[in-house]
Image 1 (tube, helix red, strand yellow):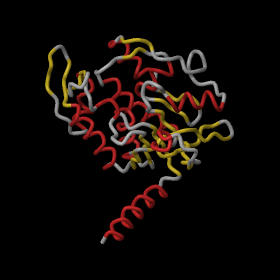
Image 2: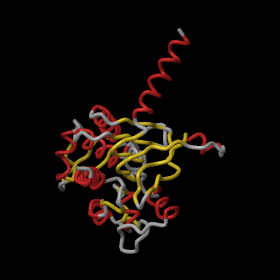
Image 3: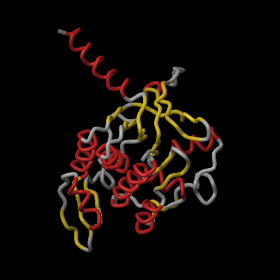
Image 4: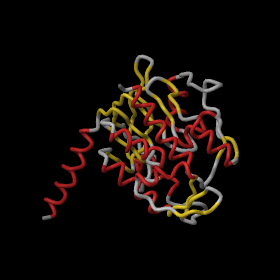
Length: 255
């Protein structure tokens, strides 16, 4: 029995991983914008794989604000919550609250049910760069990085790479540093996140969601960090809309 169980796990996982060695879209970071983008791209017929560094996907959604597991969205985001089956309540003044645990769970569930594949405990340590285009990611186990082991990685080929790593915008920073590229920002590089200003942060999160270089995109707080947007804290409307916007951009580019 023990051997059969182990074989089942190994066969299932490696079948899934082998199928995702080449994808249409590789999403780095399973936060809200990445999960929403994954769901919409998968529904649109794209082959999508998500790579999450932590054991639990969901990004910063789980904790709400300061571990109070409620989050806030605006009225214009309610159609997205309804599409994902997320319950919400009016908080007055055109704001609505949702349970952050239900929200994270629903985003993960619908992304996977749409056909996206999710690999957790995997760190993206480099990009694949050929002929002036970002065309994949370089992956390794997160525990390998935590233990400081010298273990060579594997490569995932992708037509589009989405940086959804949040505040550090790690994938875009890697691309700028190692490939020496000039990205689609006012400075040509990563500008860095500005301090908290919720109203402006919500707007800039969506505005800064864009194609930064052939094959390279950023969404959510990664987009804000890249283009110098303001931080917005535990209000998630901009994150949700960012995921929808970047999915539309990638779909157009991959036609």
